[in-house]
Image (cartoon, rainbow, N blue to C red; front, top):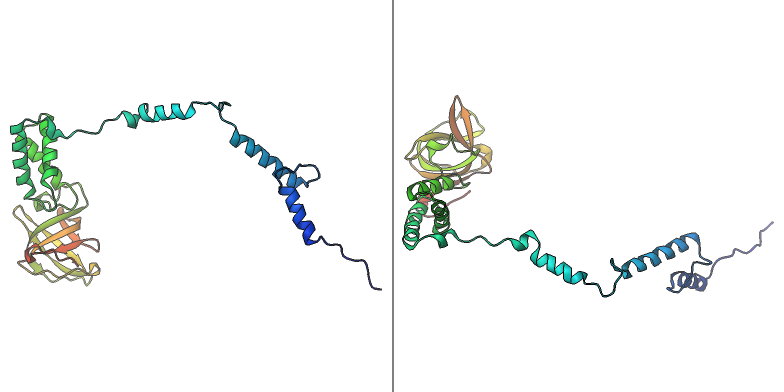
Length: 246
């Protein structure tokens, strides 16, 4: 036997009208499904919350009070910008600071005279005599990353990576195939051993060349400090008139 009972389906118009009735702003929860009623009540509660002020007054002065707090009561609003220490020096002190700053930056690359003068003025303003202030600024610049440090200070520099500059005084063959070059680098203060690892892919150096080994790793062997050129390091040649970096 064939079941001739027709299948009842909602028409497109009925579906559209049902959505309109459910989502219409004037709709009421009566006659809605449980899901539709929950959605309706949640929407009404959200509308009430957004319309209601915290103090329940349409003439609230909340905005004005907020602006007052933000402009005058916060810690950042009360803080004053730092003053330039050079403004507190006498004219002859400022001239002496500028002269010493010019001499200091001659020993360092990529350092401004203005920055050195600022640090000098800070120490002088705090009561440090000029000679000690110059020594303090030099020590600060030597301790800064990227600034070449004297080779004899490698053991005392509180960093694992340093930058040194000097002449290659000796090279010898390495027994380890992982080492590209090994030799000695020397400046006016001392000398140390340097190792260039094969995987660093750095340029070769020659005996007698002046090189700058930037961001090299310090290491110790039998109580002696040495440096290693890694993939993060750079080898530069100041005598070529420009820095040549691999």
